[in-house]
Amino acid sequence: MKVAALAGGTGSAKLLRGLSRLDIDLSVVANVGDNVWMYGAYVCPDIDVTCYTLSGIADSSRGWGIDGDTFAALGMFARAGLETWFRLGDRDLSVCMARTEMMRRGSTLTEATEKVRRGLGVRSPVLPASDQELETRVDTPMGDLHLQEFWVRERGLPRVTAVRYKGARSARPTARVREAILEAERVVLCPANPVTSIGPMLAVPGLRRLLADSDARVVALSPMSGRRPISGPAGKFMKALGREADSVGVAGLYSSFLDAIIVSREDEGMRRKIQALGVECEASDTLMRGPDDELRLAKELLRL
Ligand code: GDP
Image (cartoon, rainbow, N blue to C red; front, side, top):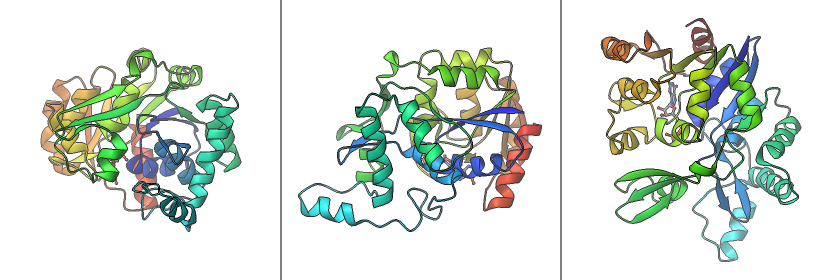
């Protein structure tokens, strides 16, 4: 079965680990909205967490970076006078620098990612949603911040008044993303922040249309449980957009192309509201505590 999975960060990585254990032809479409220029390198957190996870080198306890990484470069950056609020290990930085060098020599982000994922031994293609630079910007009382400034430097504390996807209007889905979605028999929206991980991909003109036009059944695993996300700041962003921070809110954001969603058992009572949006709804144990849950939910999504 050909499967295209739309992925953000930590929650997505867990489900991707489950999907990658199945006998399917998997392509991952990765968010680019949280990419950031840092220490002279183009850092792509969601692309990299995907590659590190699928190659088995991710630090899954921390949720980012490479297991056993060291932080010598960061220490020297600080001594040399740079602000070092964005933590990046030496090996992780090497990958970002390699990508930057390839792009400086003329590769697209897609081409550079292809080399990196092959080099790391990742079997599935990892496809940046767009090759154009697209930045998730967060409006706060302290000004307009890059998502990483908001979440990492400011620890997600400022009030969010709006979210914008800078550069989205002139971005477009890559040819490989178009092909992956249009040829898929199933599209899986991994559990990810609907506003800052899936939102930037949906903001790329034409991407929503591809999902709606694809013959694939489009299914999602909700990142919410009750009236909050399982982890991270998704609730704060959903509320800033005037959406409920629950599975009904998530289904509402995706309803123009979504066929079915798995929600947590706690949210069984939301089934009617979700069905009223034209989206089928199943309840399950949606928490991925380890490999068994990851595999179980991957299978449930392909059966849904
Ligand atoms: P974040 O909001 O900055 O963390 O951005 P991500 O795209 O990395 O979001 C991770 C999302 O995955 C969050 O909204 C979590 O609620 C969700 N998530 C994390 N762990 C799990 C899990 O075990 N199961 C499910 N269903 N969702 C999860």
